[in-house]
Image 1 (cartoon, rainbow, N blue to C red):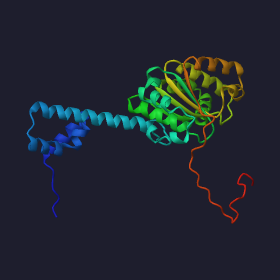
Image 2: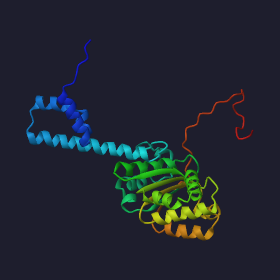
Image 3: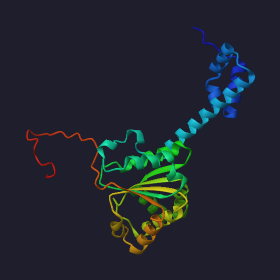
Image 4: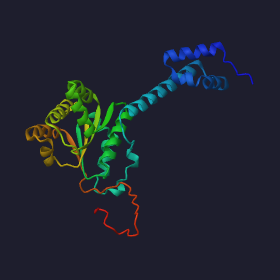
Length: 265
C-alpha cells in the first residue's frame, strides 16, 4: 500500500504553528478547517474561537505543568476527603477557607497538628492543588527531605540560593515536621526560610508535635520562640489531635491465631 504524503503547504503550516507556539491549532488543524467548512462561521467568530481554544489549551498545559513540578507524592483533592470519618474537624471552616482562597489572598502559616493517618497531608495537598489550579506556584516537600537538602547546601555553600528558591514559592507544604532529628545549622536555615516567607508567602506545615514540643525538637528555645512569635501573628491551626487514622487497613495473618497481639514481636 502506498503511504499517503502530506501536501507541502500543510507541512509548512505545521512548522509555522509550531514556531509560533500554537500547539492546540497545530494538533487540531484538520478538525478546525473541517468545522469551518461545515458551519461557515463569520471571520470574527472563526478567529475568536481559535484564540479562545488556544488560550484555554495553553492555560491547561501550564496548570498540568505546575502540578507536575510541585513534587506532589499523591494527588489528593478536597472532594475526596472523608469528612464523615472526622467529625471533630470543622468541615464548613475547612471548605470556606478552601473555596474563598483566603489562605492565598492573605499569605499566612497554616499548621495541621494530629496523629499519623488522620488526613493532615491530604488536606494540605488539597489546598496546594487548589492554589496550583488557580495559577499559583507551589511545592510539596517532606521535612526530612528539606533537612537533607539544607545540609547538602551547607556543605557546598549554596544555602542562600536554596533558601531563596524555597522562599519564592507562592505556597509551600512542609510535611511531617518533627519526624527527623535536626542539626543546629539546619534549624538556623529553617528559621531563616520561615522568616523570609513570613507574611509574604503561604506555608503549610503538618506535624504530630504541638507547639509546646517544638523547642525540644529544634533544640533552641530562643529560635523556637522567635519562629512561633512570627507564625502566630497570622496563622490558622488545624487541631486534629482527636481525629482518628483514616488509612485503609489490609492486615493478613500468616498463622491460624488471628487474635494475636500484632504489637508484640
